[in-house]
Amino acid sequence: MPDHAPQPDERETLRFRRIVVIGGGCYGSWYTQQLDRAAAKGRLVADEVVVVDRNPACRVAARAAAGDYATLPLRVERTTWADYCATWLGTGPDALARDAMVPSPLMPHLCLDWLLSRLVTRWPHRAVRVEPLDTTPPTPWERAAPDGRHYVSFATWTCPVNCIEPARCPATRDVRDWSMPAAMTTFAEREPTLGRAVIFPCIHRTHGVGMIDAAPIAAAESRVAAWAEGASARVLVGTVSHCHGALGVLAID
Image (cartoon, rainbow, N blue to C red):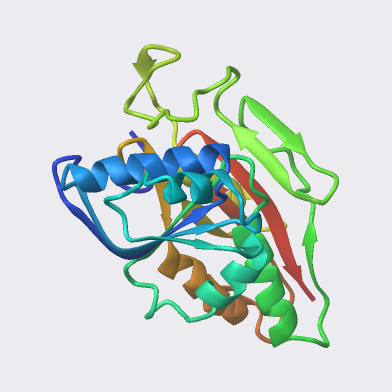
């Protein structure tokens, strides 16, 4: 099976410095609940769990005030997702070696947006932008958005939010012979106007919660900058699980 990253052993105790949950509403409260359950069972240890939501009365904040999530060292950061990521990811890959992001299924393409903002700051006199894909990705389901982003899926059915994308797909009841990180890397390599890709895999870690390691997000700025130093570049940026993904072409002239 062409998995980009191995599934962790559920029996292991996962250890983090900081886990950042994007959004404190419906999805974020469920993810925080599952992290709390993992911590209570000794499967997860974190120095800090930060839930980012600009609404001071979000569901996580209300449940925490009522005494939920008692096992977690929880803090609700009342700010926008983009502002939090700008500060957090801006500390650099070394500082983020033990940090991870828990994305929301409905969030914007934050990793691409963060990279875009960093490169605009790095090169204020160059044209740095997001462009639409020239070629439709080879996935069973795909949609282009008006802002140049593209959304892809290997599923033509509705998946439950708590699916861990196991080796045997619960929908097809057959072996899952696809993995979006590998597929999108190959797609970029075969596209004559691309050739390069930065892919951020969101992989199930524990109790139904998928995470993206933070250090590779921060390190991507230097990777893309090296490719575009003194030359134009077009890089496919993808935030993907095994089955679903958000894509965008980062263009630098």
